Image (cartoon, rainbow over all chains, first blue to last red; front, side, top):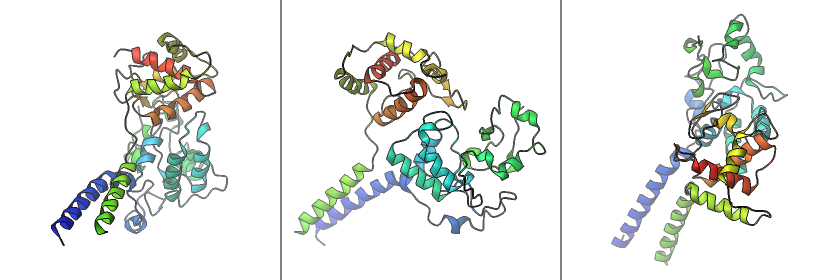
Length: 182
Length: 139
């Protein structure tokens, strides 16, 4: 190899290295997710036993950024794939406000949500509200939670997960961490 | 031949690298200039007015919300989402240097918020007026 060639490969290596650093954050993927968490997470979510976390360890930067503008970024595992498709197709009328995205961002976020959607809630009607699931209703009924809690202005709405689940943004709803606001 | 090949290969790598980067940030002044360019071509265009922008910002139009419903009457102060209660960083560039520096974000939020407040898209004149107002708000 001539000195010129060595020089070229050095420049190429530095260029590639610099690019990989800038691109890792946005484009990293997690194909080994299921193998990685299959054993570790079973049983972790009480009776749910989804076998994988609600929010994958390798999340998506666009999802995090866009879906947390107005509320917490609800973890993809909280709704079935069909629901996410319907949600993302109707962002211009999103629970009473326009939350539309450009086509490219919408495609990327939809793919992430669908790929990591709930693997235990199949609902042909594609519900848009997490609080419509039988699981949610059971965990939040009057036996579990004093109805007065819902009237607390710090709670405001069942959509406000983090009022009582401090780790909700990370997809962690472990019941040992629940803190009801006073 | 090999020289040509490796030179074009390196160029390709560099171009691909650039394409992966986000759009270059602009200043609020540059954003205002591009809105001005768009507005100047529309019939009845008037010089942007901070007073008109303020009135648009603070009054209700087609719906229950005005801009101020979430951003408050003082755009240099933090706001609060009218429905979810989530804190919104200040909108005035004097209080938040990141505002009006990304054409993509500006387009996204004008589309969303004009639809929520006016039930339609805003005209370039209206956008320019509102930005003119926001640029006069002191910290």
